[in-house]
Amino acid sequence: MKTKSIQQQDEQFRQALQAVPVRNAHVRATPLPEDPQRLEVEVELLYRTPVQRFLRRLLRASPTKRYKLDRLGTRVYGMIDGRKTYGELVDEFAAAEKLTFFESRALLGQFLQHLARRGLVVATVRKSAP
Image 1 (spheres, rainbow, N blue to C red):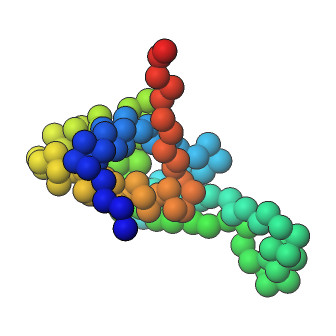
Image 2: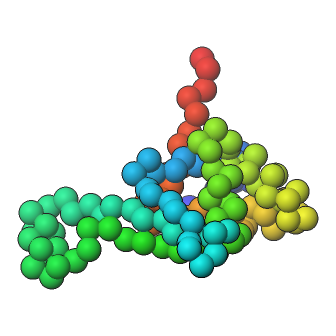
């Protein structure tokens, strides 16, 4: 296993902070009737291959998946506007929740990974000027 130098790790960390989380435009987010401060988000599932589409029809699988976000998750999801970088979101979250930068980074990083795995957000990188 090849280990990275401290300089390489520092550069990778700086690049990660410049990533911009963007919401999936096809996600429908609606407040929960029992608690309007929470969201239910619904995303369409993709069945790409003919075999997957056949199995979906055969098993009568739902074409969508729904997730309920808690109040904190709803607040973080609301912070994602497609313009703020991950670093800016970390700073904003740390200030709002009275956390250190590192605590905020750990919590947000984990939550954004969960959202990305479920197809709710994607991380993009801004094109740098020449």
